[in-house]
Image 1 (cartoon, rainbow, N blue to C red):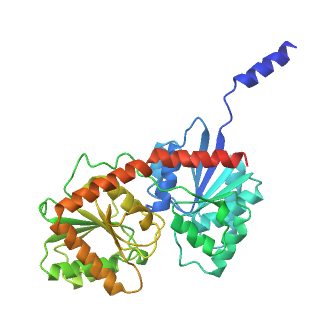
Image 2 (image 1 turned 180 degrees about the vertical axis):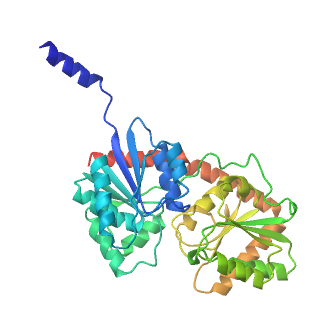
Image 3 (image 1 turned 90 degrees about the vertical axis):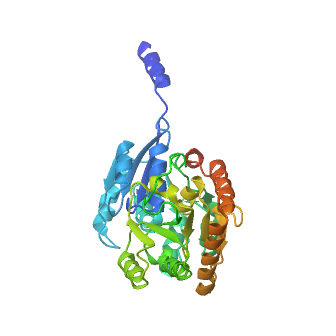
Length: 384
């Protein structure tokens, strides 16, 4: 009898079981979805959640952040689009961790991760759709719709992304919109000079991966026009990618090396970005831009294309300007030129919009709010 009472007392004294979350993502490259996943994994309450991360293809710079947060990382090493050996290794990782929820991010991880979760009998699955993806064809949407039937929820970062996927046949009732977040370190308490040779000139910033989606060549045309008009400025492009060599050749062919600087991938963006007087985003499609969020948190006004994702962040005429994307690239480029000049000629407008930007981020896009929204989603999923 004493043994029975002792057992019951021990069970009552034990701490509640933590919810085990397995985050699966293709890589840990320095990109938007990867950044948000690492922020989430590193900041979920450790007394309530046990988190492990799987990188499906390869590791990357954000692995250091996971290590610092003591989050275990497994790299599967997928080499091909259809890689049965990667499937086998992923299933082994799932079986070993025995998660309560598999949360997969982006197309490859959504396909491989959900298949592994189903095969291993994981009770709950959440997928993440992070971007308007015009590159997807019928084959991709077939896979998305097939696995959506076996998914508890589909988490996304903007209404624009949700609308895109609902139009392509995914069930709207399964979507949960949780905006991206900005870390507290993005403040403007300390300004640093990117290039001390040009401290008095108007500074234009771009923070983006250098690939076609971002349309950096459009902005080089904008800079060529400003230079032709003999307007004094310095433009700084932070980021790397497959378009780098092409963009460097284009810059040099247009004789812009004196005013356009490619800084490459950087670990100190939060120290460099405060120097910008304005941030530009000319993307053809987005999910929800981290660089726009971070610039707004620093009180830097933004000029961006009026695409889904950007329109969730930038209040046109309030925290920055939205440029009509449309089909006329000439009009888009001219609008960028006009809005840059408007900011150059009106420092008071920059300051007012920057202050409104900071307030908007502080009210709606904090890390604490994002983490709590995901924690609530996980709790809701477990009791479904």
